[in-house]
Image (cartoon, rainbow, N blue to C red):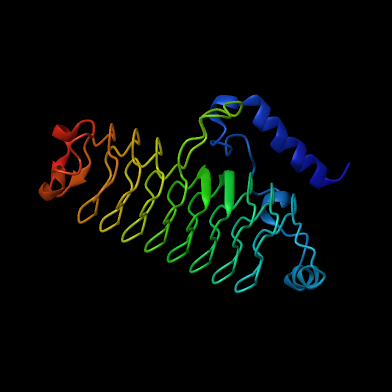
Amino acid sequence: MNRHFLARAAFAGLLIATPLHAQDMLKGVDLSQPAYSQSEMTRAEVEAALDARNIDFSGKSLNGLDLSHLDLSGANFRAARLNKVRLSGAKLDAAVLDQAWLIEADLTGASLKGAQAFAAQMQRMNADGADFSGARLAGDLTGASLRGARFDHADLSADMKNQSMGLMRAVLRSAHLENALLRKANLMSADLRFAHAAGADFSDANLANADASGADFTGAIFAGANTKDLDLDSAQIDAAMEGPLQKAQHLDRARRQ
């Protein structure tokens, strides 16, 4: 029985065993295992596959590879392991990253327009300046660096239809969103606890029922945003923001700059 089959079986077992904590997939996973720390392909082999128009990398271990500046538009990375991969400046428009592992991956300046990442593990990923416009993100981005990233029209909301894996949504706990653009983004019920979002633009975004306890929103823009029941307990805001935030929860507990 090869190691790739075992890795996929372990992943599937985790999905079944922890339906209410589907996004906390790191429990019980040894990231030092070859499936999560080594690559079964070289960059040259990836380039050859692209030349042959083979863009199916589902289930592959590509950890640590330097794939920067490659055009991977529309590629299938479902359940692939891409931990610590370098994809800076790469093009991943319309790529499928469902259940993919991108822990500590480098996507600086990458383009992921219209990409799909459902139940993806993206903790501590560096995607400063990346473009997620129109993407569907319902994964764990805890501690990710997303400074100046673009999420215009992106969907980071909770998936209320498919509950077999528990509540799937974008988890941005302690993520760095300074000066990020989230205009008309859907962040309904997203987890923004302790997010660093100073100067971020949430114009016309949907933040209904999102949890932003302890987040830093100094200098952020909420013009036209839906902030109904947005939890601002201990969040840091500017006094001038109170108008757009009137429908938020615990506005009285927010800290004023």
